Length: 567
Ligand SMILES: Cc1cc2nc3c(=O)[nH]c(=O)nc-3n(C[C@H](O)[C@H](O)[C@H](O)COP(=O)(O)OP(=O)(O)OC[C@H]3O[C@@H](n4cnc5c(N)ncnc54)[C@H](O)[C@@H]3O)c2cc1C
Ligand code: SF4
View 1 (cartoon, rainbow, N blue to C red):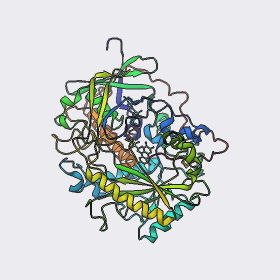
View 2: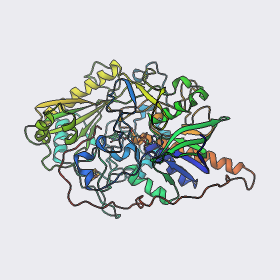
View 3: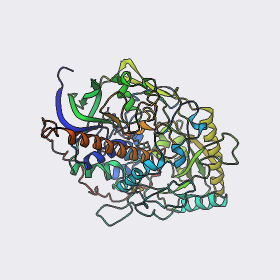
View 4: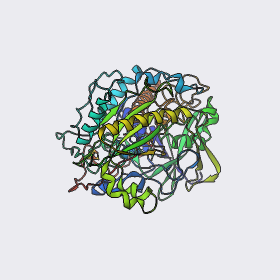
């Protein structure tokens, strides 16, 4: 590392600015700690371009054009492309903010199998963090309808928006089949009372950055306020190596882009939150698994849910107002159903989804077909099925030291196969989704099996057993005193709800623990030694960072492109 410079004196260094990193930083900044965050990507621009079909995440410059990961099985090499930007995947996510159910943290043996996955705490221990995460993310929802809803200590921040015509159709259809549709909790800003633009119910939400900043993603609703409170964020700065000495991380080597300058930062605690693929990548590239008593589990138990979208094709346009309509969830089959013989045990969730992104249809459909079917897109609306998947040791990430990328990182190699149970659970949910869509008026169906790793989780799991769980119950990496992991990697099982609120709750819990540990140490230190020596000068916050609570310029008129992410 010859020519790198050293930056010292931080209490906490957070790697990655997604849900996990931002929420861990939130807890640390709130405790008065000096926090540096390094983020590989830059800020996502907001404005009318986000409403264009090309605004869908996979076509933006924030997603690597060439797949840097090699996939040995499962997935699709073309689609396993990481997304690097301030806020991480939250910027493009669908805003669905569901908590795991109580029983998800005491998982069914049918899911656990031989993986020895076990949550080290109960839902009640995570509940206060879920409540706080919902407040921070301004989640709008309606309690008391979802039949599997877990205990809540606080109400939702706001009520949801009125149902669109398409949603009312699905609601009636589901009810007529004896099901219990409920309002999906969404991290969307509906109020018009605090200077921020409220949601205009456009059709490019899931999979797109919000043009007007009404989606409460991390880059909009969390980071600007933290920057105003002292968080320092270095964008276009990729961590490439964690340096361990004497049971501690003593430095984090980073590469700044585009200059290629190498910098070593150090901090009293490092919180790794680069995502469920990039975090184990960094751990393995730094050889840290050798220090962990659960070294064989590092990078293993990769989960991604077993998802599919069932599109119903309607004779008449199901969404005549052309508005956002990802509004309903159906959990009657979540923990299984008497009508489903196989598989027994948990099945998963069904959620409403809007119309597919035109740009993706054009791009992905076989040659010529895209243009042909584009006019029919408005006759589609869909249901997403999220089937619970099993954590399996065979599903893992590893590195190829002989194949290095331009930053010098060894290539990440992903191996993933669904089990027969995962696939059977998905098939069962697809059948239910088709019944609902048929009852709502759809006469033809198209099933798209999701192959991305948008719900990747579980590669550095928490647990009680130090020989099978690389992280302790707080997310601390065993074998290293001052390394914590705050992103989706921490999950021992992933239930069947979208993961972001659980990652956020874990991030807050992990960050709070770090703050407690550092504060306790400072209190024990002899007078005058509470604070580390300061050898740095705080850099100004990026000039182009949005002001906290600022509303991005409101574009004139949303286009009426149909659009949908894969989640
Ligand atoms: C289209 C889409 C829609 C989705 N919709 C929903 C939804 O509605 N509800 C839901 O709950 N979930 C949804 N998800 C999933 C959810 O967005 C992710 O599970 C979640 O954002 C993951 O958060 P994370 O903090 O673990 O990681 P990430 O969001 O991946 O954040 C990791 C961050 O680390 C940065 N990074 C990576 N490597 C480095 C490095 N070496 N150095 C520095 N920085 C680095 C990355 O650039 C990134 O900013 C969706 C996902 C997609 C793709
Ligand atoms: S529906 Fe449109 S305006 Fe509303 S939050 Fe989503 S992207 Fe923003």
